[in-house]
Length: 600
Image (tube, rainbow, N blue to C red; front, side, top):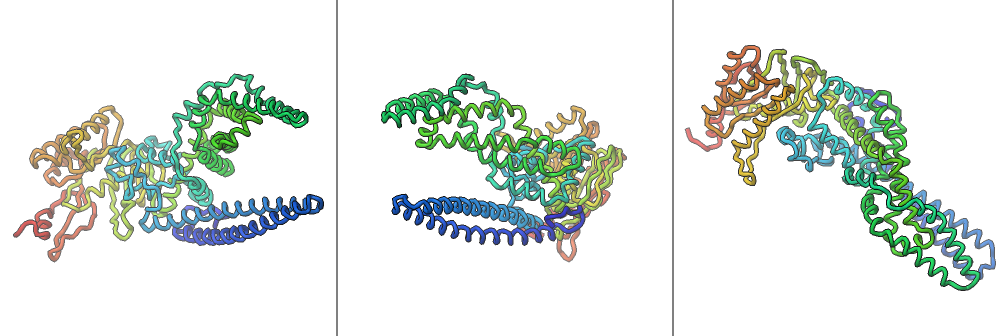
Protein backbone atom coordinates (compact mmCIF):
# COMPACT_ATOMS: atom_id res chain seq x y z
CA UNK A 1 0.00 0.00 0.00
CA UNK A 2 3.02 2.27 0.45
CA UNK A 3 3.99 1.77 -3.17
CA UNK A 4 0.70 2.79 -4.75
CA UNK A 5 -1.54 5.81 -4.48
CA UNK A 6 -5.03 5.25 -3.16
CA UNK A 7 -8.13 6.50 -4.87
CA UNK A 8 -10.29 8.74 -2.74
CA UNK A 9 -12.84 6.01 -1.99
CA UNK A 10 -10.70 2.90 -2.60
CA UNK A 11 -10.56 1.71 1.01
CA UNK A 12 -11.81 2.77 4.41
CA UNK A 13 -9.31 4.91 6.34
CA UNK A 14 -9.33 2.52 9.30
CA UNK A 15 -8.13 -0.31 7.03
CA UNK A 16 -5.35 1.85 5.61
CA UNK A 17 -4.11 3.02 9.01
CA UNK A 18 -4.25 -0.48 10.48
CA UNK A 19 -2.31 -1.92 7.54
CA UNK A 20 0.35 0.77 7.73
CA UNK A 21 0.56 0.54 11.53
CA UNK A 22 1.33 -3.17 11.39
CA UNK A 23 3.95 -2.60 8.69
CA UNK A 24 5.76 0.18 10.54
CA UNK A 25 5.65 -1.67 13.86
CA UNK A 26 7.37 -4.58 12.11
CA UNK A 27 9.96 -2.18 10.66
CA UNK A 28 10.55 -0.68 14.11
CA UNK A 29 11.28 -4.13 15.57
CA UNK A 30 13.49 -5.09 12.62
CA UNK A 31 15.65 -1.97 12.73
CA UNK A 32 15.76 -2.12 16.54
CA UNK A 33 17.17 -5.64 16.43
CA UNK A 34 19.64 -4.65 13.73
CA UNK A 35 20.83 -1.66 15.73
CA UNK A 36 21.29 -3.83 18.81
CA UNK A 37 23.35 -6.35 16.85
CA UNK A 38 25.47 -3.57 15.34
CA UNK A 39 25.98 -2.15 18.81
CA UNK A 40 27.64 -5.41 19.90
CA UNK A 41 29.66 -5.58 16.67
CA UNK A 42 30.82 -2.03 17.34
CA UNK A 43 32.03 -3.02 20.82
CA UNK A 44 33.91 -6.07 19.52
CA UNK A 45 35.57 -4.10 16.69
CA UNK A 46 36.58 -1.38 19.14
CA UNK A 47 38.12 -3.94 21.51
CA UNK A 48 39.97 -5.56 18.60
CA UNK A 49 41.23 -2.15 17.49
CA UNK A 50 42.39 -1.26 21.00
CA UNK A 51 44.16 -4.64 21.32
CA UNK A 52 45.88 -4.16 17.96
CA UNK A 53 47.11 -0.68 18.91
CA UNK A 54 48.49 -1.97 22.23
CA UNK A 55 50.31 -4.85 20.51
CA UNK A 56 51.67 -2.48 17.88
CA UNK A 57 52.98 -0.15 20.59
CA UNK A 58 54.56 -3.09 22.45
CA UNK A 59 56.35 -4.10 19.23
CA UNK A 60 57.96 -0.63 19.27
CA UNK A 61 56.22 0.06 15.94
CA UNK A 62 58.65 -2.37 14.36
CA UNK A 63 56.17 -4.62 12.63
CA UNK A 64 54.42 -2.86 9.74
CA UNK A 65 51.59 -5.38 9.41
CA UNK A 66 50.19 -4.15 12.77
CA UNK A 67 49.74 -0.76 11.10
CA UNK A 68 47.80 -2.40 8.27
CA UNK A 69 45.53 -4.24 10.72
CA UNK A 70 45.04 -1.07 12.76
CA UNK A 71 44.06 0.89 9.66
CA UNK A 72 41.66 -1.84 8.56
CA UNK A 73 39.99 -2.07 11.98
CA UNK A 74 39.75 1.74 12.20
CA UNK A 75 37.94 1.84 8.86
CA UNK A 76 35.73 -1.08 9.89
CA UNK A 77 34.84 0.66 13.18
CA UNK A 78 33.82 3.84 11.35
CA UNK A 79 31.74 1.79 8.90
CA UNK A 80 29.96 -0.13 11.68
CA UNK A 81 29.23 3.11 13.54
CA UNK A 82 27.68 4.59 10.38
CA UNK A 83 25.54 1.44 9.93
CA UNK A 84 24.44 1.67 13.56
CA UNK A 85 23.47 5.34 13.23
CA UNK A 86 21.58 4.60 10.01
CA UNK A 87 19.67 1.76 11.71
CA UNK A 88 18.76 3.98 14.64
CA UNK A 89 17.58 6.66 12.20
CA UNK A 90 15.45 4.13 10.31
CA UNK A 91 14.09 2.85 13.61
CA UNK A 92 13.06 6.37 14.64
CA UNK A 93 11.43 6.95 11.24
CA UNK A 94 9.41 3.72 11.52
CA UNK A 95 8.55 4.53 15.14
CA UNK A 96 7.18 7.97 14.18
CA UNK A 97 5.21 6.58 11.24
CA UNK A 98 3.75 3.86 13.47
CA UNK A 99 2.79 6.55 15.98
CA UNK A 100 1.10 8.61 13.26
CA UNK A 101 -1.07 5.69 12.14
CA UNK A 102 -1.81 4.65 15.73
CA UNK A 103 -2.96 8.16 16.61
CA UNK A 104 -5.05 8.35 13.42
CA UNK A 105 -6.85 5.16 14.46
CA UNK A 106 -7.44 6.61 17.94
CA UNK A 107 -8.75 9.82 16.39
CA UNK A 108 -11.20 7.89 14.22
CA UNK A 109 -12.39 6.30 17.46
CA UNK A 110 -12.97 9.74 18.99
CA UNK A 111 -9.74 10.13 21.00
CA UNK A 112 -7.50 12.88 19.59
CA UNK A 113 -5.37 13.37 22.72
CA UNK A 114 -2.23 12.28 20.85
CA UNK A 115 -2.33 15.30 18.55
CA UNK A 116 -1.50 18.96 19.17
CA UNK A 117 -4.53 20.49 20.92
CA UNK A 118 -4.05 24.08 19.76
CA UNK A 119 -4.65 25.31 23.31
CA UNK A 120 -2.19 28.16 22.76
CA UNK A 121 -4.56 29.59 20.13
CA UNK A 122 -7.60 29.55 22.44
CA UNK A 123 -8.86 32.96 23.53
CA UNK A 124 -7.39 34.72 20.49
CA UNK A 125 -10.63 34.78 18.51
CA UNK A 126 -14.23 35.12 19.71
CA UNK A 127 -15.64 32.97 16.91
CA UNK A 128 -13.10 30.21 17.65
CA UNK A 129 -14.21 30.16 21.30
CA UNK A 130 -17.89 30.06 20.31
CA UNK A 131 -17.36 27.12 17.94
CA UNK A 132 -14.89 25.27 20.20
CA UNK A 133 -12.15 25.25 17.58
CA UNK A 134 -9.16 25.02 19.92
CA UNK A 135 -8.29 23.04 23.02
CA UNK A 136 -8.26 19.38 24.01
CA UNK A 137 -12.02 19.04 23.38
CA UNK A 138 -12.06 21.26 20.31
CA UNK A 139 -11.85 20.67 16.58
CA UNK A 140 -8.12 21.42 16.23
CA UNK A 141 -6.65 18.11 17.54
CA UNK A 142 -9.07 16.15 15.33
CA UNK A 143 -8.27 18.35 12.36
CA UNK A 144 -4.70 19.67 12.29
CA UNK A 145 -1.87 17.45 11.10
CA UNK A 146 0.80 20.14 11.03
CA UNK A 147 3.95 19.11 12.88
CA UNK A 148 6.01 22.33 12.82
CA UNK A 149 5.17 25.32 15.00
CA UNK A 150 4.78 27.59 11.98
CA UNK A 151 2.61 25.01 10.20
CA UNK A 152 0.37 24.76 13.25
CA UNK A 153 0.04 28.55 13.32
CA UNK A 154 -0.98 28.62 9.66
CA UNK A 155 -3.66 25.95 10.18
CA UNK A 156 -5.05 27.94 13.12
CA UNK A 157 -5.09 31.06 10.93
CA UNK A 158 -6.93 29.18 8.16
CA UNK A 159 -9.52 28.06 10.72
CA UNK A 160 -10.23 31.58 11.97
CA UNK A 161 -9.80 33.35 8.60
CA UNK A 162 -11.17 30.99 5.92
CA UNK A 163 -11.35 31.77 2.22
CA UNK A 164 -14.15 33.97 0.88
CA UNK A 165 -13.73 33.82 -2.91
CA UNK A 166 -15.30 30.96 -4.84
CA UNK A 167 -12.37 30.47 -7.23
CA UNK A 168 -9.85 30.30 -4.36
CA UNK A 169 -11.97 27.71 -2.55
CA UNK A 170 -12.26 25.55 -5.67
CA UNK A 171 -8.51 25.85 -6.38
CA UNK A 172 -7.69 24.71 -2.87
CA UNK A 173 -10.19 21.86 -3.12
CA UNK A 174 -8.41 20.69 -6.28
CA UNK A 175 -5.01 20.75 -4.54
CA UNK A 176 -6.42 18.84 -1.57
CA UNK A 177 -7.98 16.24 -3.87
CA UNK A 178 -4.58 15.64 -5.48
CA UNK A 179 -2.95 15.06 -2.08
CA UNK A 180 -5.58 12.72 -0.65
CA UNK A 181 -4.43 9.52 -2.42
CA UNK A 182 -0.73 10.18 -1.76
CA UNK A 183 -0.86 9.03 1.85
CA UNK A 184 2.78 7.91 1.71
CA UNK A 185 4.02 11.44 0.94
CA UNK A 186 1.65 13.03 3.45
CA UNK A 187 2.74 10.81 6.31
CA UNK A 188 6.43 11.08 5.42
CA UNK A 189 6.07 14.88 5.49
CA UNK A 190 4.38 14.73 8.88
CA UNK A 191 6.98 12.26 10.15
CA UNK A 192 9.78 14.64 9.19
CA UNK A 193 7.96 17.55 10.82
CA UNK A 194 7.68 15.53 14.05
CA UNK A 195 11.38 14.57 13.92
CA UNK A 196 12.18 17.60 16.05
CA UNK A 197 10.05 19.12 18.79
CA UNK A 198 7.98 22.01 17.37
CA UNK A 199 9.83 25.18 18.26
CA UNK A 200 8.60 28.65 17.24
CA UNK A 201 11.02 30.41 14.91
CA UNK A 202 11.15 34.22 15.38
CA UNK A 203 10.65 35.10 11.72
CA UNK A 204 10.41 38.86 12.24
CA UNK A 205 13.60 39.01 14.32
CA UNK A 206 15.43 36.80 11.81
CA UNK A 207 14.25 38.92 8.90
CA UNK A 208 15.56 42.06 10.63
CA UNK A 209 18.87 40.27 11.27
CA UNK A 210 19.04 39.20 7.62
CA UNK A 211 19.05 42.83 6.53
CA UNK A 212 21.63 44.07 9.02
CA UNK A 213 24.76 45.38 7.23
CA UNK A 214 27.98 43.32 7.58
CA UNK A 215 30.41 44.55 10.23
CA UNK A 216 33.54 42.93 8.77
CA UNK A 217 35.27 44.91 6.05
CA UNK A 218 36.01 43.04 2.80
CA UNK A 219 39.77 42.98 3.46
CA UNK A 220 39.17 40.73 6.48
CA UNK A 221 38.26 38.01 3.99
CA UNK A 222 41.82 38.14 2.60
CA UNK A 223 43.33 37.96 6.10
CA UNK A 224 41.11 34.98 6.99
CA UNK A 225 42.17 33.12 3.85
CA UNK A 226 45.91 33.80 4.31
CA UNK A 227 46.05 33.17 8.06
CA UNK A 228 46.15 29.31 7.92
CA UNK A 229 49.11 29.44 5.53
CA UNK A 230 50.87 31.99 7.76
CA UNK A 231 50.33 29.80 10.84
CA UNK A 232 51.54 26.70 8.98
CA UNK A 233 54.72 28.56 8.03
CA UNK A 234 55.27 29.77 11.58
CA UNK A 235 54.79 26.25 12.98
CA UNK A 236 57.31 24.78 10.51
CA UNK A 237 59.77 27.58 11.20
CA UNK A 238 59.45 27.16 14.98
CA UNK A 239 59.90 23.41 14.65
CA UNK A 240 63.04 23.80 12.56
CA UNK A 241 64.51 26.55 14.75
CA UNK A 242 63.41 25.03 18.05
CA UNK A 243 62.03 28.40 19.16
CA UNK A 244 58.30 28.51 19.96
CA UNK A 245 57.86 32.12 21.03
CA UNK A 246 56.82 33.28 17.50
CA UNK A 247 53.99 30.69 17.53
CA UNK A 248 52.82 31.84 20.95
CA UNK A 249 52.88 35.45 19.73
CA UNK A 250 50.89 34.50 16.60
CA UNK A 251 48.28 32.72 18.75
CA UNK A 252 47.94 35.80 20.95
CA UNK A 253 47.52 38.01 17.85
CA UNK A 254 44.87 35.66 16.37
CA UNK A 255 42.84 35.52 19.57
CA UNK A 256 43.13 39.30 19.96
CA UNK A 257 41.77 39.81 16.42
CA UNK A 258 38.84 37.52 17.05
CA UNK A 259 38.24 38.93 20.53
CA UNK A 260 38.03 42.43 19.09
CA UNK A 261 34.69 41.51 17.41
CA UNK A 262 33.15 39.36 20.18
CA UNK A 263 30.56 42.01 21.07
CA UNK A 264 29.33 41.95 17.47
CA UNK A 265 29.70 38.19 17.01
CA UNK A 266 27.55 37.31 20.02
CA UNK A 267 24.33 38.96 18.70
CA UNK A 268 24.78 37.06 15.44
CA UNK A 269 25.29 33.86 17.40
CA UNK A 270 22.17 34.54 19.47
CA UNK A 271 20.13 35.27 16.33
CA UNK A 272 20.45 31.74 14.93
CA UNK A 273 21.73 29.78 17.93
CA UNK A 274 19.41 26.96 18.90
CA UNK A 275 17.70 26.76 15.51
CA UNK A 276 20.22 24.59 13.67
CA UNK A 277 18.04 21.49 14.11
CA UNK A 278 14.95 23.35 12.93
CA UNK A 279 16.85 24.59 9.85
CA UNK A 280 18.14 21.08 9.12
CA UNK A 281 14.69 19.55 9.57
CA UNK A 282 13.11 22.19 7.33
CA UNK A 283 15.75 21.38 4.72
CA UNK A 284 14.71 17.72 4.78
CA UNK A 285 11.05 18.69 4.35
CA UNK A 286 11.91 20.98 1.44
CA UNK A 287 13.83 18.14 -0.19
CA UNK A 288 10.78 15.87 0.13
CA UNK A 289 8.53 18.55 -1.41
CA UNK A 290 11.00 19.17 -4.24
CA UNK A 291 11.19 15.45 -5.08
CA UNK A 292 7.44 14.87 -5.18
CA UNK A 293 5.61 15.09 -8.51
CA UNK A 294 2.65 17.50 -8.48
CA UNK A 295 0.34 18.33 -11.36
CA UNK A 296 -1.90 21.19 -10.19
CA UNK A 297 -0.96 24.86 -10.12
CA UNK A 298 -1.08 25.48 -6.37
CA UNK A 299 1.12 22.49 -5.56
CA UNK A 300 3.46 23.15 -8.49
CA UNK A 301 3.95 26.72 -7.24
CA UNK A 302 4.77 25.48 -3.74
CA UNK A 303 7.24 22.99 -5.20
CA UNK A 304 8.91 25.80 -7.15
CA UNK A 305 9.22 27.81 -3.93
CA UNK A 306 10.78 24.84 -2.16
CA UNK A 307 13.44 24.07 -4.76
CA UNK A 308 16.94 25.02 -3.70
CA UNK A 309 15.88 25.67 -0.14
CA UNK A 310 17.05 22.32 1.19
CA UNK A 311 20.70 22.93 0.22
CA UNK A 312 20.67 26.50 1.50
CA UNK A 313 19.08 25.63 4.86
CA UNK A 314 21.44 22.69 5.39
CA UNK A 315 24.31 25.11 4.91
CA UNK A 316 22.79 27.60 7.37
CA UNK A 317 22.31 24.75 9.85
CA UNK A 318 26.01 23.83 9.56
CA UNK A 319 26.99 27.47 10.07
CA UNK A 320 24.74 27.70 13.15
CA UNK A 321 26.41 24.54 14.48
CA UNK A 322 29.81 26.10 13.83
CA UNK A 323 28.85 29.10 15.95
CA UNK A 324 27.61 26.79 18.70
CA UNK A 325 30.94 24.93 18.58
CA UNK A 326 32.77 28.08 19.64
CA UNK A 327 31.23 27.72 23.10
CA UNK A 328 33.77 24.94 23.73
CA UNK A 329 36.78 26.81 25.13
CA UNK A 330 39.46 24.45 23.83
CA UNK A 331 37.90 24.26 20.36
CA UNK A 332 37.55 28.06 20.32
CA UNK A 333 41.27 28.58 21.05
CA UNK A 334 42.50 25.93 18.60
CA UNK A 335 40.27 26.82 15.62
CA UNK A 336 40.63 30.57 15.95
CA UNK A 337 44.37 30.58 16.58
CA UNK A 338 45.13 28.24 13.68
CA UNK A 339 42.74 29.54 10.98
CA UNK A 340 40.50 32.29 12.46
CA UNK A 341 37.42 30.03 12.45
CA UNK A 342 35.05 32.77 13.68
CA UNK A 343 35.96 35.03 10.76
CA UNK A 344 35.43 32.24 8.23
CA UNK A 345 32.03 31.41 9.77
CA UNK A 346 30.94 35.04 9.93
CA UNK A 347 31.96 35.72 6.34
CA UNK A 348 30.10 32.62 5.14
CA UNK A 349 27.01 33.70 7.08
CA UNK A 350 27.18 37.16 5.50
CA UNK A 351 27.45 35.53 2.07
CA UNK A 352 24.44 33.37 2.91
CA UNK A 353 22.41 36.38 4.04
CA UNK A 354 23.27 38.32 0.92
CA UNK A 355 22.24 35.43 -1.33
CA UNK A 356 19.07 34.25 0.40
CA UNK A 357 17.73 37.13 2.52
CA UNK A 358 14.86 37.69 0.08
CA UNK A 359 13.98 34.02 -0.38
CA UNK A 360 14.38 32.22 2.94
CA UNK A 361 10.86 32.97 4.22
CA UNK A 362 9.39 31.52 1.00
CA UNK A 363 10.80 28.11 1.98
CA UNK A 364 9.10 28.10 5.37
CA UNK A 365 5.95 29.44 3.75
CA UNK A 366 6.00 26.50 1.30
CA UNK A 367 6.42 24.02 4.17
CA UNK A 368 3.60 25.61 6.19
CA UNK A 369 1.23 25.63 3.19
CA UNK A 370 2.02 21.99 2.37
CA UNK A 371 1.30 21.12 6.00
CA UNK A 372 -1.96 23.04 5.75
CA UNK A 373 -2.99 21.27 2.54
CA UNK A 374 -1.92 17.94 4.05
CA UNK A 375 -4.18 18.74 7.02
CA UNK A 376 -7.14 19.36 4.72
CA UNK A 377 -6.36 16.21 2.72
CA UNK A 378 -6.09 14.13 5.90
CA UNK A 379 -9.46 15.44 7.11
CA UNK A 380 -11.08 14.60 3.76
CA UNK A 381 -9.48 11.13 3.76
CA UNK A 382 -10.71 10.48 7.32
CA UNK A 383 -14.28 11.44 6.32
CA UNK A 384 -15.11 9.32 3.27
CA UNK A 385 -18.84 9.90 3.86
CA UNK A 386 -18.43 13.67 3.79
CA UNK A 387 -19.07 15.82 0.73
CA UNK A 388 -17.16 18.39 -1.28
CA UNK A 389 -19.13 21.61 -0.69
CA UNK A 390 -20.17 23.57 -3.75
CA UNK A 391 -20.06 27.37 -3.43
CA UNK A 392 -23.04 29.14 -5.02
CA UNK A 393 -24.07 32.75 -5.45
CA UNK A 394 -27.48 32.43 -3.76
CA UNK A 395 -29.54 29.99 -1.73
CA UNK A 396 -28.50 27.15 0.59
CA UNK A 397 -29.01 23.39 0.27
CA UNK A 398 -27.57 21.10 2.93
CA UNK A 399 -28.33 17.40 3.18
CA UNK A 400 -27.69 15.16 6.22
CA UNK A 401 -25.34 17.56 8.01
CA UNK A 402 -23.80 16.44 11.31
CA UNK A 403 -21.38 17.88 13.86
CA UNK A 404 -17.94 16.31 13.16
CA UNK A 405 -17.09 15.79 16.84
CA UNK A 406 -20.26 13.94 17.84
CA UNK A 407 -19.76 10.14 17.59
CA UNK A 408 -21.50 8.53 14.65
CA UNK A 409 -23.68 6.36 16.91
CA UNK A 410 -24.96 9.44 18.76
CA UNK A 411 -25.25 12.17 16.12
CA UNK A 412 -28.43 13.06 14.26
CA UNK A 413 -28.22 14.48 10.76
CA UNK A 414 -30.33 17.41 9.58
CA UNK A 415 -31.26 19.00 6.26
CA UNK A 416 -31.58 22.69 5.57
CA UNK A 417 -32.84 24.50 2.46
CA UNK A 418 -32.93 28.27 2.16
CA UNK A 419 -34.33 30.11 -0.84
CA UNK A 420 -32.33 33.05 -2.23
CA UNK A 421 -34.67 35.54 -0.50
CA UNK A 422 -34.16 34.21 3.06
CA UNK A 423 -32.19 36.53 5.29
CA UNK A 424 -32.97 35.25 8.79
CA UNK A 425 -33.51 31.73 10.13
CA UNK A 426 -35.27 31.76 13.49
CA UNK A 427 -34.76 28.51 15.42
CA UNK A 428 -36.98 27.93 18.45
CA UNK A 429 -37.02 25.04 20.86
CA UNK A 430 -36.93 23.99 24.49
CA UNK A 431 -33.87 23.48 26.66
CA UNK A 432 -31.38 20.84 25.46
CA UNK A 433 -33.36 20.27 22.25
CA UNK A 434 -30.30 20.89 20.04
CA UNK A 435 -30.48 24.55 18.99
CA UNK A 436 -26.97 25.55 20.10
CA UNK A 437 -25.39 22.36 18.73
CA UNK A 438 -27.09 22.99 15.39
CA UNK A 439 -25.65 26.52 15.22
CA UNK A 440 -22.18 25.16 15.94
CA UNK A 441 -22.73 22.44 13.33
CA UNK A 442 -23.56 25.11 10.75
CA UNK A 443 -20.55 27.22 11.76
CA UNK A 444 -17.98 24.41 11.72
CA UNK A 445 -19.18 23.02 8.40
CA UNK A 446 -19.06 26.48 6.82
CA UNK A 447 -15.47 26.85 8.07
CA UNK A 448 -14.54 23.42 6.69
CA UNK A 449 -16.11 24.33 3.35
CA UNK A 450 -14.34 27.68 3.15
CA UNK A 451 -11.00 26.13 4.09
CA UNK A 452 -11.31 23.89 1.04
CA UNK A 453 -11.99 20.46 2.50
CA UNK A 454 -14.92 18.13 3.03
CA UNK A 455 -17.93 19.06 5.11
CA UNK A 456 -19.62 16.48 7.30
CA UNK A 457 -22.78 16.30 5.19
CA UNK A 458 -24.04 14.35 2.19
CA UNK A 459 -24.37 17.52 0.12
CA UNK A 460 -23.72 21.20 0.74
CA UNK A 461 -24.35 24.22 -1.46
CA UNK A 462 -23.70 27.47 0.38
CA UNK A 463 -22.68 31.09 -0.10
CA UNK A 464 -19.08 31.76 1.02
CA UNK A 465 -18.93 34.75 3.32
CA UNK A 466 -17.47 36.02 6.55
CA UNK A 467 -18.64 34.34 9.74
CA UNK A 468 -19.63 36.15 12.94
CA UNK A 469 -20.92 34.42 16.06
CA UNK A 470 -22.34 35.25 19.47
CA UNK A 471 -22.91 31.87 21.06
CA UNK A 472 -20.99 32.11 24.31
CA UNK A 473 -20.53 35.23 26.47
CA UNK A 474 -17.97 35.74 29.24
CA UNK A 475 -18.05 38.57 31.72
CA UNK A 476 -14.83 40.17 32.97
CA UNK A 477 -14.17 41.32 36.53
CA UNK A 478 -10.80 42.70 35.46
CA UNK A 479 -12.45 44.96 32.88
CA UNK A 480 -15.54 45.62 35.07
CA UNK A 481 -17.68 44.20 32.25
CA UNK A 482 -20.97 42.52 33.15
CA UNK A 483 -22.36 39.53 31.26
CA UNK A 484 -25.01 41.72 29.61
CA UNK A 485 -22.56 44.47 28.63
CA UNK A 486 -20.12 41.88 27.21
CA UNK A 487 -22.90 40.57 24.97
CA UNK A 488 -23.88 44.07 23.83
CA UNK A 489 -20.27 44.81 22.90
CA UNK A 490 -20.13 41.62 20.87
CA UNK A 491 -23.37 42.48 19.03
CA UNK A 492 -22.15 46.03 18.42
CA UNK A 493 -18.95 44.70 16.89
CA UNK A 494 -20.90 42.41 14.55
CA UNK A 495 -23.23 45.20 13.42
CA UNK A 496 -20.32 47.59 12.87
CA UNK A 497 -18.59 45.00 10.65
CA UNK A 498 -21.79 44.36 8.68
CA UNK A 499 -22.22 48.07 8.02
CA UNK A 500 -19.05 47.98 5.92
CA UNK A 501 -21.21 46.32 3.25
CA UNK A 502 -19.42 42.95 3.06
CA UNK A 503 -21.84 39.99 3.25
CA UNK A 504 -21.61 37.70 6.26
CA UNK A 505 -23.14 34.73 8.03
CA UNK A 506 -24.21 35.55 11.59
CA UNK A 507 -24.91 32.90 14.24
CA UNK A 508 -26.66 34.13 17.41
CA UNK A 509 -27.71 32.01 20.37
CA UNK A 510 -30.21 33.32 22.93
CA UNK A 511 -29.40 37.01 22.54
CA UNK A 512 -29.94 39.37 25.50
CA UNK A 513 -29.85 36.62 28.11
CA UNK A 514 -29.15 39.15 30.86
CA UNK A 515 -32.46 41.01 30.82
CA UNK A 516 -36.16 40.32 31.53
CA UNK A 517 -38.39 38.40 29.12
CA UNK A 518 -40.33 41.33 27.64
CA UNK A 519 -37.23 43.45 27.17
CA UNK A 520 -35.40 40.44 25.75
CA UNK A 521 -38.14 39.71 23.18
CA UNK A 522 -38.44 43.31 22.06
CA UNK A 523 -34.68 43.76 21.84
CA UNK A 524 -34.23 40.52 19.90
CA UNK A 525 -36.99 41.46 17.44
CA UNK A 526 -35.44 44.89 16.87
CA UNK A 527 -32.03 43.28 16.35
CA UNK A 528 -33.49 41.02 13.64
CA UNK A 529 -35.20 44.02 12.04
CA UNK A 530 -31.83 45.73 11.79
CA UNK A 531 -30.06 42.60 10.52
CA UNK A 532 -32.62 42.38 7.71
CA UNK A 533 -31.38 45.74 6.46
CA UNK A 534 -27.76 44.60 6.42
CA UNK A 535 -25.93 42.18 4.03
CA UNK A 536 -26.19 39.13 6.26
CA UNK A 537 -27.77 35.71 6.51
CA UNK A 538 -28.56 35.30 10.20
CA UNK A 539 -29.36 32.24 12.29
CA UNK A 540 -30.89 33.07 15.67
CA UNK A 541 -31.75 30.42 18.26
CA UNK A 542 -34.23 31.35 20.97
CA UNK A 543 -36.60 29.98 23.59
CA UNK A 544 -39.05 32.79 22.86
CA UNK A 545 -41.56 31.15 20.56
CA UNK A 546 -43.50 34.41 20.27
CA UNK A 547 -40.75 35.70 17.98
CA UNK A 548 -42.09 33.34 15.32
CA UNK A 549 -44.48 36.10 14.21
CA UNK A 550 -41.52 37.76 12.46
CA UNK A 551 -41.93 35.25 9.62
CA UNK A 552 -45.48 36.55 9.10
CA UNK A 553 -44.26 40.13 9.28
CA UNK A 554 -41.46 39.47 6.74
CA UNK A 555 -42.64 36.64 4.47
CA UNK A 556 -39.82 35.17 2.40
CA UNK A 557 -37.17 37.00 4.45
CA UNK A 558 -37.63 35.27 7.81
CA UNK A 559 -38.26 31.52 8.13
CA UNK A 560 -39.05 29.47 11.22
CA UNK A 561 -37.40 26.19 12.15
CA UNK A 562 -37.60 24.36 15.45
CA UNK A 563 -36.41 21.48 17.63
CA UNK A 564 -39.08 19.71 19.66
CA UNK A 565 -39.07 17.65 22.85
CA UNK A 566 -41.72 15.25 24.06
CA UNK A 567 -42.64 13.63 27.36
CA UNK A 568 -43.27 9.88 27.16
CA UNK A 569 -43.84 7.70 30.23
CA UNK A 570 -42.73 10.59 32.42
CA UNK A 571 -39.43 10.77 30.50
CA UNK A 572 -38.21 13.75 28.50
CA UNK A 573 -37.35 12.67 24.95
CA UNK A 574 -35.40 14.50 22.21
CA UNK A 575 -35.02 13.49 18.58
CA UNK A 576 -32.78 16.46 17.63
CA UNK A 577 -34.55 16.77 14.27
CA UNK A 578 -34.81 20.18 12.65
CA UNK A 579 -38.40 20.88 11.55
CA UNK A 580 -40.07 23.79 9.78
CA UNK A 581 -42.26 25.91 12.03
CA UNK A 582 -42.32 27.16 15.62
CA UNK A 583 -41.63 24.99 18.67
CA UNK A 584 -44.69 24.21 20.79
CA UNK A 585 -43.35 22.24 23.74
CA UNK A 586 -41.58 23.48 26.89
CA UNK A 587 -39.59 21.47 29.41
CA UNK A 588 -38.01 23.74 32.02
CA UNK A 589 -40.70 23.17 34.68
CA UNK A 590 -40.78 19.44 33.98
CA UNK A 591 -36.98 19.18 34.43
CA UNK A 592 -37.08 21.15 37.67
CA UNK A 593 -39.74 18.79 39.03
CA UNK A 594 -37.78 15.74 37.90
CA UNK A 595 -34.68 16.95 39.73
CA UNK A 596 -36.62 17.86 42.86
CA UNK A 597 -35.86 21.56 42.58
CA UNK A 598 -39.56 22.43 42.74
CA UNK A 599 -42.54 20.43 43.91
CA UNK A 600 -45.87 19.84 42.22
